[in-house]
Amino acid sequence: HVTFEYCDQMVADFEKVIDHPIREKSSVYYTGVDLGTACVVVAVLDENKRPVAGAYRYADVVRDGMVVDYIGAVQIVRELKEEIEEKLDTELIYAAGAIPPGTDLLDSGAVKNVIQGAGFELTNMLDESTAANEVLKMKNGAVVDIGGGTTGISILKDGKVVYIADEPTGGTHFSLVISGAYGKSFEEAELYKRDEKNHRELIPVLQPVIEKVSSIITQHIKDYDVQELSLVGGTCCLSGIEDIIEKRTKVYTHKPKNPMFVTPLGIALSC
Ligand code: ATP
Figure 1 (cartoon, rainbow, N blue to C red):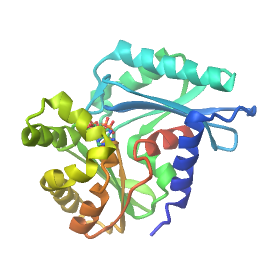
Figure 2: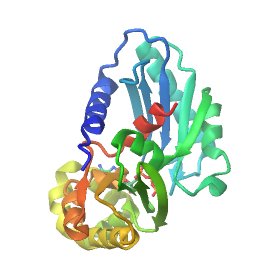
Figure 3: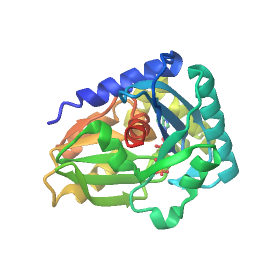
Figure 4: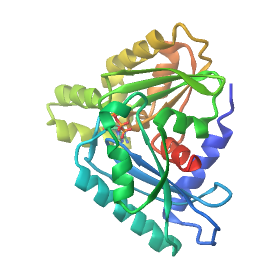
């Protein structure tokens, strides 16, 4: 297996600089903008491609990878940009963005327009799994992106995406299960699920839906030589999800310390 050492270090460094930005001047800054269903993340790297600052905001501007609130999305990206510019005392000029693999036609440039609308000069647009693998550096594995509405599976061969699939099971279903089991509204269930303190108690309740996600993964990887899985996306923040997935798929499963930060860092690396 790849060691994921680079990924783990990048994510750990990024978490640090969100609270304590590195203000030393850099000749250039590379910015990655990731518009997620749960969260919009902006990651900034210096000339050596090391994290120097970042910011994120829980938001409701994207659903299932599609921008549903364009004006809101532009405003949030602009605010995060300004927040980081103030922290670094510099202007951020260049940024890259990403869309879920296979959604180019559906997106029709919305993400690109959000990034430009927020005042960035766009240098690159790529697919989210290619972006994530810039940080993960897997050769023969799969990026499993468990988001809100869907689970995306991207299989890599020699480091290149060779197969993609997107199945309509994701964190929304997890929240529906919690809502049913606890008699909570969907919104209450969402908040309950996001609180790490509740994860241990929730795992048995969510076991069947996690097993469903696992069998979806197994189904899609069966014809490929997949030696490792790497979990990204908001739903993978659930503590313990990685153990069930590894057990069910029987494939080594890596989970970064914060699965929501891998893709934005990869986007920034490609800037
Ligand atoms: P989509 O599949 O909808 O395109 P996305 O990739 O844009 O999704 P993400 O932002 O990666 O979506 O993930 C959204 C999901 O992550 C939501 O269902 C949300 O409830 C869930 N989520 C966010 N934070 C946590 C957390 N701390 N614990 C558990 N689930 C979480």
